[in-house]
Image (tube, rainbow, N blue to C red; front, side, top):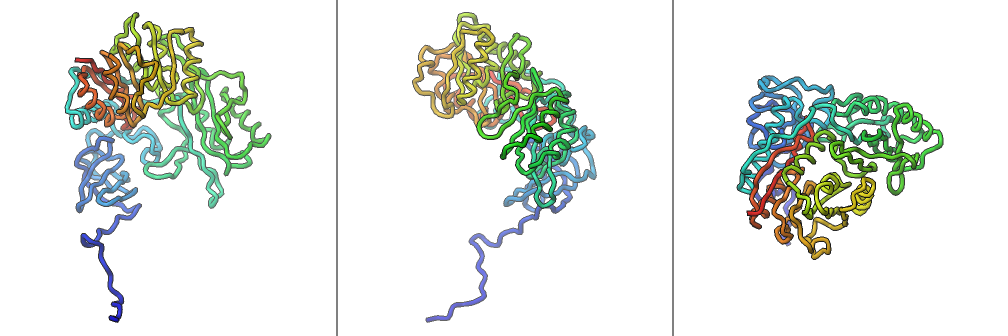
Length: 450
């Protein structure tokens, strides 16, 4: 038997593997252009760098957040040569908090970036351009966010409670004493929240905190162990001082400490009040939400004798204003609790021409009873993964007009391919600036049957 050869080192097929770039390494880079998500793109030694906080034409020092093969993710630490477009970041936590990634761009440039992102997706993926581009729907660039989730974590090693927002590119928590994008009623709560939570007896049992400002202000605390009477007293005193409702989320669904308190938001132009519970989906930008609903109604042009379908209806954000204008609204949602709340919202607003149904809208539309009579028009507002299975059957419902509200231009473009195949044409499209200071793009598109 031959003796085994010792000490040989075998290479994987394909040759030697390039050394990985360590997290934390700093690198000087020249930014070539902006990516669709607002990050700067640089190229160095065969790798593509995506740099948060950098602009085209700038020379920056970037710190590595992570590397995967030939792609490096980094954030700007220092700007050696600034773009003429750069403005001082309005927030003191810029560059550390992961929430507002493009606040170094003036607001009009943010809108232009989002418009380019939408146009590029529609052109590259679907090969179409709308017959008409709508002006961006926008509101104030600060003080707009009425809902926020605050991260809370007990650091056992340091024996301290961390309270704030997630850092850019990591699970670290950045302590936040002021957030310029929060609506004003939530600012004092945000600033005093860490000190209050640190007084609780079991900080390691705390989850997150959710803040909401609507028809009332609410503070929800997620906790993984029962709260002591003393802790509950601290929480109630804090909320009483800020004239806020206290909601607790232990086992089961979130519950208000005072069950007689009502929580919700108004759609003022339609004199509607919608009930809301922490955990429900709600648009965080109240002003742009109202403008979005108004534009959707204008584009859909519902008539008094029509039957209209609202898919992914949520709490009835579109369905209830629609119901004021048409013969009947059929509204469909995947989450059973939201369906029940939407039906209650219709009843409480004295709207009796609405019907609500629960269905898994990630699956093909089956021969549901509610779909058999057909519809004149359809409105849909799906989550980020879009509505591909739903749009495959829309032409069979007989709808001549379709308004698609999207929170992801990539899946809107993908679904547009299918709608065009069914004979719809893209009449109009535009962006909705629901999240100023971020690269997140929401859009609205109007399709009409050819």
